[in-house]
Image 1 (cartoon, rainbow, N blue to C red):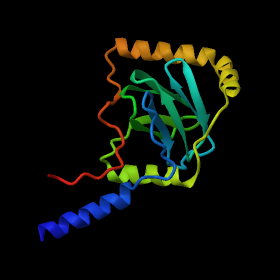
Image 2 (image 1 turned 30 degrees about the vertical axis):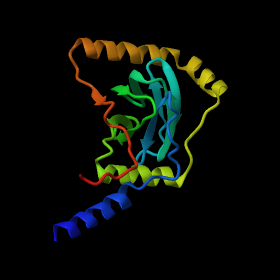
Image 3 (image 1 turned 90 degrees about the horizontal axis):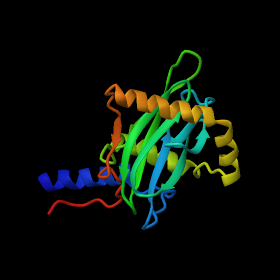
Image 4 (image 1 turned 60 degrees about the vertical axis):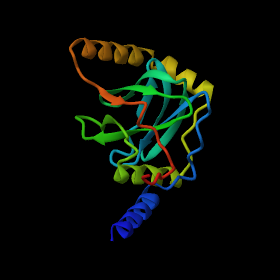
Length: 189
């Protein structure tokens, strides 16, 4: 009976977290972070995504961005009516996910960034379904440069807000290096 339940569990996990066709392996010397917005709530409102002072891109939902970055510590953040931050530590050759959740704001949707734990089957199922629907949003270097120049004040205010909140002792969400996506289901020994 226990063996049968274990097999059923593995089949469920494999179905729910099966590898997405749109997840390409991370380069050996880079980490990959997917910013995903599976919800269609507030779908007309763009969220802008940053790695510290670097604009990664912006999109309305439900869509996603695949972002390759150097391994190590990063400050990822998003902007809409508000700003939300995640402190991250990522490893080379690993894939990570951050979910952008829209919430009702005063004038437009607010954004909340949440690290995705790949062991969370329900969330991973939503993420992988989104990745299977369409390719990543992409931006040319010229597009990002132009947008960055237009957002210099926004970026400066975002970094000042983070520094002020950090000084006040605000605890930010953490994307830990151990929260990487592994498409292999490992049976217990």
